[in-house]
Every structure is written in C-alpha cells, then in structure tokens.
Image (tube, rainbow, N blue to C red; front, side):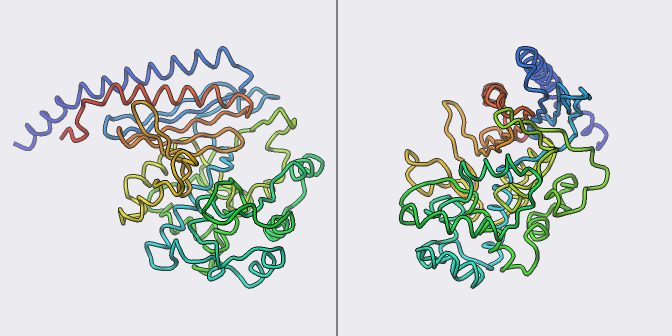
Amino acid sequence: MNQIRTISSIILLFPFFLHAQTLESYFQHKLDSLFNEHKDAIGVILHIECPDNNISWTYSVGSSNKETLQTLNEQQPILVASNTKPYVAASILRLVEMDKIELDQPINKYLTAETNQIFKKNGYDFNAISVRHLTSHTSGINDYVDKAYFQFVRQNPQYNWKKEEQIKRSAEIGGPLFDAGTNFKYGDINYLLLTEIIEQATGLPFYNSIKKLLKFEELKLTSTWFKNLEPYPANTLPLAHQYADKYDWDSYNLNPSWDLYGGGGIATTAKEAALFFQYLFEGEIIEDESILKEMYQYVLPKEKSNYCLGINNISFPNFTAYYHGGWWGTDVAYIPETNTSVAVFTLQKSKRDEFARLSIEFMGKLQEEFKDIPADKE
C-alpha cells in the first residue's frame, strides 16, 4: 500500500517538475539574452527559491573578474552591502521574541554610556528615540555616510575604519534631522547602533550573536559571514569581484571596514541570501507570528515610506515584495503570494537596475504561473 501511495504521489507531482523545468529554461533564456545586451555588467548571479512549486534554481553568466575573465560560478559569494540590514533587523526581532529588548523602548536604555554621551553632546535625546525608530530609519540621526565620506574612502581605500569612529562621525556631523518617528531618512548609523544593542543584550560580538540568533548552523547557512570579522567559511568559493565604475572601485581593493558593522558587512551566495529570506518569512527563524509581522508592517504612512523594519514592503500590480537592496548591486525579495524568494547579484553596480527589473519580471511570471495552483500538493 505504501509503495502504491508513493508511486501515486510521484505521478501527481510529475507535471509540477516538468513545469518547473520549463520555467527554469525560460529564466535562463531571459537572463542570457539580457546579459548579451549588457555584457559590461561583468557578471550576474540569480537564484530563485520556490519550494511549493519545486524550484530551487541558481544560474550565473559572465565573469568573476573583469581582468582575468575567469568564469563566474553561481556558488561564488559576494558582499551584499545593505542587504545586511534584514539580518540585523531579524536579530533585533529575535531579541524581542526572547524578551531581551522591546521595540518601543528608548535606545538610551540599551546603548553604552559612552555612545549615549557622544550623541547627547551633539544635541540628541536618546530617550526620545526607540529601537523601532532605528530599525525603520525614522530616528532622525545624521548618517556618517556622505559625499566627504566617499571621497575619503576613494583617497584612502585601505583605511581601517573602526565602528566607534563612524558613530562619532555621525554625532559630530550635526544634530537631529527631525523628531523621531515623524519622517524617514535612510542611514547606516541606525544599524551600527542596532549592532551595539545586540552586543549589549547578548554579551557577544554582534557578528557572533547574529549567527546564533538567526540559526545559521541549524539552517545550514554555511557560506554567510561578516568579512574580516569572521574566518573565511570552509568549502566556500572565492569572493567574486564587484565593481563601481563611478569611483573606479574594485571590491578587492577596498578595506571592507568602510561598510562592515551592520549597515553592511555580510558576504554570502545568491542561494543563501534567497534561502535566508525564505526561512525568515516562513517562520523558521522568528517563530512568533505577531513579532515577525512587525518586520513588514509600515511604520510611517505607506505614501511617506514603504520601509518597515529592515525590509521594504512594496506593492506591485499583482503581487507584494518584501525587499532589500545593497549598494554594490545586490537585490533580494520575498513574494508572499507564491512563497518565493529571488536574489539577483550584479557585479557592476551601474548595471544593477537592468537586472533588478528582470527579477521583477520573474516574480510576476511566477505569480501568473502559480496563482491558481494550491500550495499543498501532497
């Protein structure tokens, strides 16, 4: 009887496997065609994770190094820059779930006395800024990243930034931009302060805490790490080069400390980036559904900002995307309607938009293909 049931299950699932293979061929053709039009993108890696419809597909085109033209491997990791923020935000929500912190408590309760004093001297009242304000970029704190910062990095690419320097720079640039909770201004400083909160709550370096809080070992996210702060993971391919032609930058030539302490810093593969979003929004990491929902609930009116807690909640005509992007050219999104995650990594920053648009097309294609297929096919 069990054998008959197994054979019946295989027969029932076979059309879905065929459908998945057809879609993967479609995705590959579209990506190949677009890359042939934009070979100055250097290289692109795409991963689509759609477990309800038997898709877990990674594909790469182009080179990992524009000098050597070495073929880009789809399993090569890259720096995801601001795509680090969803990991930090999820860690904060895990601490909320563990009753270690509260989202609406003022941050002066959780930060070190030194950090509180640095900002107080420059006109900030951290009793009026909450953890939620930091996580949603509604704190009103000036960011240390500005034109002068980029100019310094350009002139001093191997300078080893300390987290404390960046915090002090933010405080000294100027006082509050607005009252906390009244407006949105994206800034890495918010996430540097969140990593300090993580350290104060756990007693561990934030990068160690994040790995534990987000269950990296349990979920087998073995090629996701903070570059230069943690050892290079075993059995992980070399980082691909990433390029920003506006500054004539190659990621290999920059000390990663300029974007390392929570605003950025994570290196990972496209597959693991997509899987992290998948596990997160499926409830594998934050198990309390009411706390997980905080991540994609609007903090300000949607018309004012679609940034929630470490995630943009973006409405498209036929689907929703929980999304984040990264400065070097990384885009990751989860589509709740189809329980799908898409990650697209573009090695040339200036060509990112071309391939991000393609990923939106793919999300729409999946929604169109699977809108009438029940998720439970057993």
